[in-house]
Picture 1 (cartoon, rainbow, N blue to C red):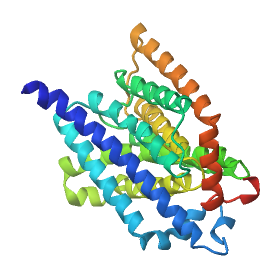
Picture 2 (spheres, rainbow, N blue to C red):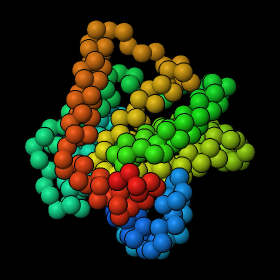
Picture 3 (tube, rainbow, N blue to C red):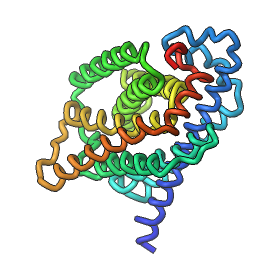
Picture 4 (cartoon, one colour):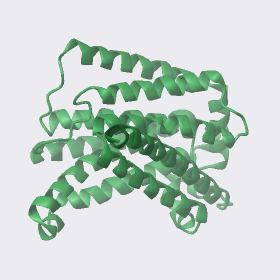
Length: 314
């Protein structure tokens, strides 16, 4: 009975959460594509982030609302999994959302993913899961140094602005990947702000939390991640966007843990070897996905009918 509660149940809930997050991303992409199709004059595509100009249309779509309902269900499953199991057990399981997103993305072009795409997705999922399994890979424990946190926020904001600038005039796949990187940075910063806000709420109460800045920055980073995630889903490949976000998020969280939460990285040979293998798997998986004919077909289709801002590059 104890094994079921501590291992089997959290593993099952972790896979359910991964599936729901992938389904949510697929539904959100469908909503973005419908909103783009309703923009007959393509006015939104003349802006750097076209999805911002389509948000009113998104809010009126049942598909978009279904996507967010599914996303909330995913968070509930993740919370339940973390309640019964450890972070080290549950967190790597969430990376399998890429394996669920791959066939959902291919459904849009009515083509089952070839073996090479499955192998690439397995390599990326395995690499991130292996990285997260290393002790202290995403350390957001302890008291944060708020001065360094402010510096980290400024660096993250500057990085996002720079990546968005670089993304302009890039081809759809590169554009989508760069925007997805920005979304991953936002979600990592959101996790750090959530940690501070939760600690403040528990230790200091509602009033103190309401007058403290991390709670407001949590709202900003979460909304920014939402917008950038929609832009990434609706301008290129869903598989590539999910893969990039799943990779960037824990890497930025690791950096925040080192610089802001004074986490100490492991110097043992085992963890260092695991990180090296994880990096090799990520490189191999990224190369495989970026050169996949199916992913390229999906990217072109999404770019033409979606919110890719520079249609001449399709």
